[in-house]
Length: 218
Image (cartoon, rainbow, N blue to C red; front, side, top):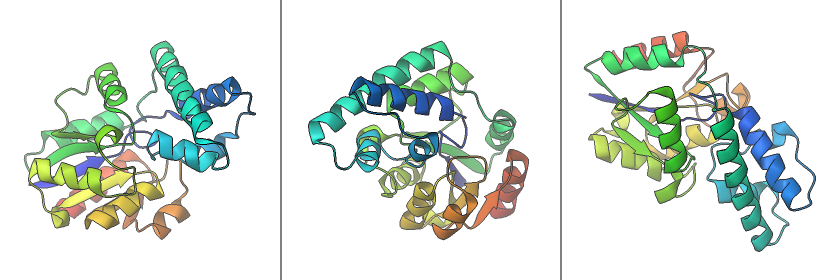
């Protein structure tokens, strides 16, 4: 059995508008100017406190903490109003991979467990993943803890594990855990960043990603 681990934001779901809106609301709630979308998306994948600290390292910790809480409130409200959609081809890819008897599917995401559960419920992905690793109980990506926990839970060796994600943090996490990193080109970090972070290959769409996984698992 081989293990296929997916990132969520920027890989399975297109949440960029929701993320940027929530961060803008959080900043404006503290009297700060909203940041450009590209700057906000550059930290997607990191655990939220780490992401905010990277965006505004010069702010005092208590203000960073209020931004974190403001983001959570705005994100939850936005998610209820209009949940982030799956990328085209994501569901079909998950369906086909999940039907194989030689693959196990898992998630490793910077989202909270509550946020991940809401996404899974909204898109009807219950029972699709054998392991769900979130930011609640692990250090932020690119630390390999989340991926290592997924491997341990599923009984998979690093050589038989692939991490699929759209950011350099995902690729660095894969490298740190001794797993293969497959990048996707439709997310929040460009291909050059993925290559530099250790991606073995980069898929332009889900159809090609599925072919890459098939080749890797052969």
